[in-house]
Length: 211
Image (cartoon, rainbow, N blue to C red; front, top):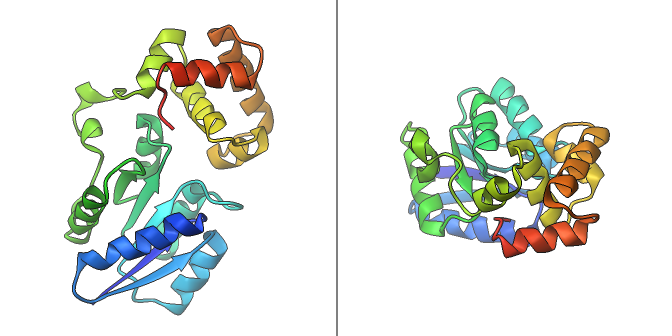
């Protein structure tokens, strides 16, 4: 029997993931938590959890910070990150923190289930486009990055701006200061030759930036 924990703050997404996980095995117990604190409480009460599916964009303690905690407290338990923020730098950072896999939220349910099967079998799972070094940086977000000369850090900030995050929320998610975020936002506006967020997001959408 498999016991799996999903830590995801959006209820609809979390419930969808919990339902999808039931296809992994004939006997699957699924647990859910909306933030890092709740996730740790669930793990304290369920020492036999086989795998954690972790969203990076959590309120309060970020998923990236929680990943580090999980690796220290439960070193043998695999953690698979699932995130809308799936640029090469973010993926690499998650893997350095000890993730056993990284599944972009744009992936299909079948892809996610296969990724979890691989991880449960002892393998490490990465998005196909990041398995081949020559493919790094590919995807829709590259159009904007190349057109306006945005750095990976600036692209991460832009992607979060598109999701409607405030400067403070972006700072918490990326674990930087709010001042650093403001510097990135100003650099993005200058590179894109715009004066506000609405103009930047309109240009980004025209160039098919991923969200």
